[in-house]
Image (cartoon, rainbow, N blue to C red; front, side, top):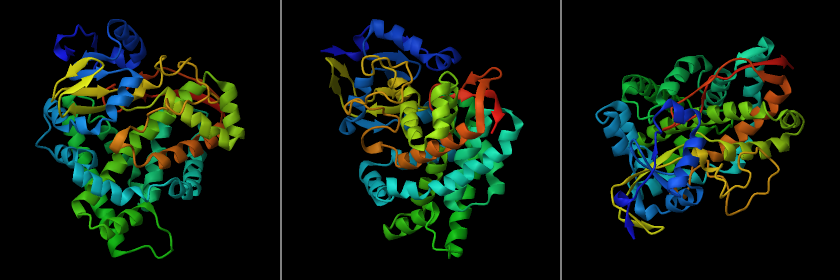
Length: 406
């Protein structure tokens, strides 16, 4: 048994633009020195798919490392710091289980499928505005879809979207480990929380009378029936806005970039609605935005290595689906690939913190891709793009495209 500190480990510069632009090359080099773990600026990075999959499920050995992130960002005594240290994932185990169990029964595939007509209507309206241009920044276009869907889910006025979209952009970089962003993150979070408090108060004062149970009504009613505190309800809705914005936008943008190299797949997406489901599942393997982080809560022995208590581990779910040891030909985008039940993508996390909104995310991505492929025909790259920071919510920054409007 070797102590983690005694290992000769590679170093991954995860905080640099170079790593964000091409993490796969850095990971491949690191693997030559050690098969599953490396040092990084803020702790250690577990980069092997099997190790991520196995350790991430060891809930008894892990605790959320939000305190560590807040310390490094120097953001503990801030509004965002308060939310970050108290929201769903950061709750003590018993409270987390109670809140999650209260709401989890409602976040089903059936509920997500009921939302599909609204999703189609939403993406169609956006495409109607953007398709005639023939040349757009696709990332900017894509950023308006998840927030428009979320506004539809809570019955919020659409004229507030633009201000809140900019705030969610800022909050999306909250775990980028770049402390100079904290003032803007706090500014955005304060406005988001005020918005959520307002829509809850308005819905309580004026319940829907059209027989439609949208997400906001469902959350309020489920929270009331489960005796969920108002503070927890507000934080949960804040969390859904924050978690649902960048992730869906970044996946949709990267999927579009990928399909520029696979025009035959893109064309089929326009023609075959069900095929879009396969494409989205492959896209989530090929790329997803998330890097999660945990503290080791008690000494952990894994693969003959002793990882001591209070070690901060980062799990780049974002690159796990390209691990050649787990996914043969992982760099090839193939929606028809045979999926090994034991080696599925882990884009929505693992263990007790698996994403509650995964079925909603899948549905909106599938519906968006089907409509976009019909209306943005023969897309081509029309300029340069860059990358968001790798820590936190990774993805493309900008994707200029030109296409034939459909």
